[in-house]
Length: 468
Image (cartoon, rainbow, N blue to C red; front, side, top):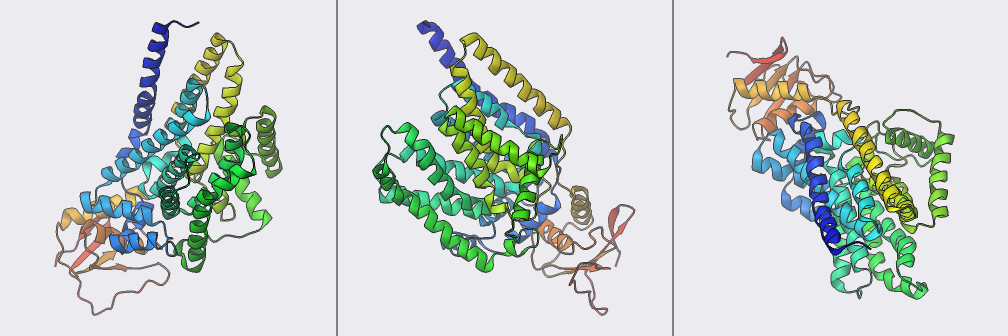
């Protein structure tokens, strides 16, 4: 039997583990704060400034118009209004939400996993993932980060209040969290299904004698998130600009689903190797059988969480960047933590401690290896930085409504990018920005008679202003 002194010492050590993991996560991600804005950041920030706070909030809470990743727009507009066109606050804002997600995941695992040290090993694996470098280095991916924030918050709230009487406050909070998850990204549509899976898979193991009457009591709490998702989904299908884009337009065929499954699975293993589709299907089936044979309801739920979280994008064009797995990855952590929990409980203390120590060292080794060899890095940073810094250096201020011409810029068919950059640099959407030559589809050339207020030419790697 452990002495009271040893028990107190162990409790004291555990109190410092989570803060240490958070500090470790921030330290590992810190190099990303040195990154400048990339082209996706510019697109997100430029679009965010086309509407107002009240318009975005009105669209979010009207539910029917809750599409276009409006939570991300609020993030960009808020930080831009506070700090202007400066990259560091946006990087720090993203990392703070990543840390919040670790705290939420830790609280959820504390409910699902009995051994606290198993939970800390899972948290160590969540602290940093080289595949998610775009999450840390691109503010545009705040959509995925916020989606996980609200998904974990919704699941944690549901799990915490499941046995409370169903009241108006609980239903409203669940509806609000669902609205915000969907406002972050379309992956949020999976939240109601995740909540139902938790009710059907995890709850019966925690509540002795669980039967149909217990499920009936949960129906009001589940029905509202499903209703919210249904209304928002119909509105998204009707007019979402995101789903109108070719890369996001779904193709509901078995071939597309299998193509996406294979692409996501390859990303999950850092692309160290690639397997044919049949092999990946066998791997996922084997993992599900392992969860079933272990009789771990949490492991089954974690497996289902991963698959369901990716369903909203399972029929779109497969992405080549692993940030798309950020939300679903939480399910895999639950899966492996639950299985490891079962193993550790059956081992002698010394053997279990050795196993957890070895796994921790292996996780840290892989994380360091991936940090030094990031495969997924946002693009276009030098192109954006060159235009933004050069024009501001040569012309600190520009009058509202001025006509600006860019000659021989680097953006090719990305016609909206230089327009957004110039307007963001000077915080003025009234500026008219023209390009010569153009190159973007549908781009209107400037009139030959137009007198430009400022002309910037790209010469020798820099933008130089013509003297007028």
